[in-house]
Image (cartoon, rainbow, N blue to C red; front, side, top):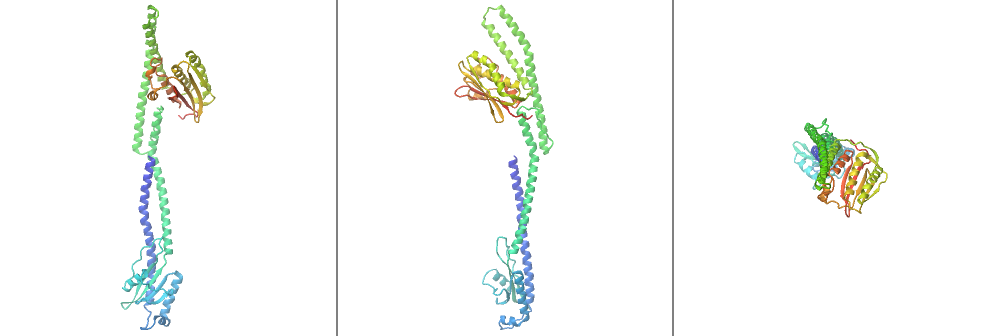
Length: 470
């Protein structure tokens, strides 16, 4: 959820910052240009005031009269100084576009372009329009023209042609400051978004971890509802209430199974005793009474397994560092006579390897798995038991050469009371593997099942090599 929520917040923040930054950047550029234009307008106004006092006799050459007229010489010196200091071209043109004074020499009114347009507007007795906005990537020049008016008539035009390099540099500098501010604001916004999403999603993450813990069998896990939005805190409290109710129901179920199993054992034991006494009154070898005795013993075994299962679900594992190889070799040696009596060869490859396990639980699980393997393996075949260490897990793999299971049966093996339809005539209650799986899960272990080619079943008992967390 965070990977979807955080990019959305960042995109929205970036859009807001751009919506604010772009107009601000344009405003900075406009302010810088307006400042230059105002300066040029002041300069042209000053030169226009000087040009008003310049007199040119009618019919004389302007360049010749400039040498005679002290005021025209003063205007020319001012323009030259202006050009030398500011590198801005400036000139005073007559109404016939003849330069009265210019700096540098040769600055004339072209037949087209910005200077021509500004000159033509000034001849109409108005200042030229403000130039178009110049951006940092453009090399345009700023042209400003003002009319020189004497006695209500336009007698000359002052034109300034400014380079835009310094102005573009100032605009770019302002943009860099804006960009730095935008980046800082974006980083600050991302940090705030991270904190916000973390604050909002932390209760969801805790709820997910707690749900997984409960699903893994740690029914005491609960959600801490100390932080987060009020709605998620309320959800956490509701989840804890649900978990409490589920735990109570499961505890009642376990207690019922344990009590029922315990209470039924005594009447069943008395019934089996009466059947045994009744057998003495019947002819020896009576098949009906033998069948009744077998069914009674099977019922007693089911009750014992139910009681073991109820206790297993309520018992915490006594984990310790255990030599898996030595323990497995011991169980293989214990089952070897049973396998030999059935005509099955039991082979063990048990190198020394350690892991965290409850020795009693692991022994019971190995007994259940090896018992099934020997029970379903035909005479003349063999059962293999191999111990291995694989990264963070130690495994005991038990393979047989029996009939095996179908894919559908593999999905159900280990379920309570489940037995394959092909093996109903073989002694068992269908609870042994369920008990083993429950006991192993309490210590972080597991049971898994797979096919063994060409025939048979492969059962893997896994236990962690590092101590499981609570």
